[in-house]
Length: 337
Image 1 (cartoon, rainbow, N blue to C red):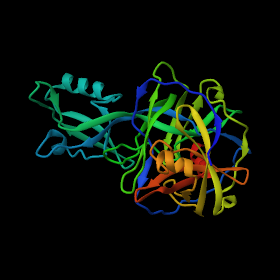
Image 2 (image 1 turned 180 degrees about the vertical axis):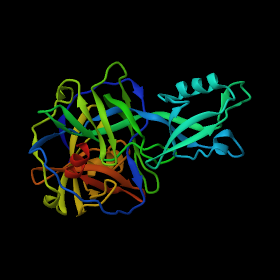
Image 3 (image 1 turned 120 degrees about the horizontal axis):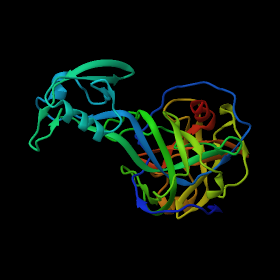
C-alpha cells in the first residue's frame, strides 16, 4: 500500500521523459569504493537540462552529402570546426556560413578516438551552407532524484545516463542543471508499450547544476539545500552484498508534488552493467493502478530495503511493466566520483 511522504516542487512547461525501457538482459561490472555512511533518499521528479560537449551527429540523409564524403558517421561528436571549439548547433552553422564552400577542418570524437576530417560545405535550397547532417547539442526531460548528501550538497539522479534518442549514445557532457518539477498526468504502461510520467518544469530558476553524465546516472550539486523537497532523514547506505532478494520499497513521485512509498519485490540481485544490478517487480496495487508499474520518468526512484538505502529504479521491461531493473546505490556512488 502506498504511504504518503512529502510535498514540494513547482511547475510550468511540458517535457519529455528520461527513463530507459529494455526488452531484457544484463552483463557484468564490478567495483566497490568508500561510501558515505548515510544519504537522504529523495524520489522527487525534476526537470533535467543537459548540454553536450560539441555537437552530436544524429542522422545522415541518404545520398551523397559533404558529411558522407568527408567520412562523418552517425554518433560522431564534432568538437572543433576550423580550429574553433563548437559550443552549439547555431554556432556551428554560423562557422559554416563564414567559411562558405571552402574546405574546413573538423575535429571529431568517435568512440573515444580523436579524428581530423576535412569537409567542404555546399549551399542548400535555402541558400545557406551546410554539410548535410542532422546534429544535436542538448536534451531536456523529466527524471527522478535518487539521493541527496546534506554534508556536501551533492545529488544523484536517474541511475542511468542520458542518451541521445536517435543514436542511443551517451550524450557527451558539457553542462547541465535541474529544475523544479511536478507530475501532471500519467500514461499507464502496457505490455509492449512503456508508460510515462507527464509533467511540467519551471524554467524560472535552477535547483542545482550537473557535473557529470555517466552510464550510472547524472550527478550534481544543489544551489541551496533540499528544503524544496522537504525530504526525510538520511539512511545508511547498503553495500551491494547487503541487497538480497525479498521485499523492498521504492519512493516515487507519480502525482503532483507528492512522494509516496510503494511496495516492490527484489527478484534477484548481483552486480552487472547498465543499471541492471537488480531485477524488480512492483507488488503495490496502488502503484499498479496508477501507472501500470514502472514507467518512464521513474528512473532514479530510491530503493529501500531492511532500513538501508539499497539503490534506484532504472529500467522497465517492455513485455511486463510491473517488472524492471535497478542499480545498486554503491554503483551509482562509484560513478559519482
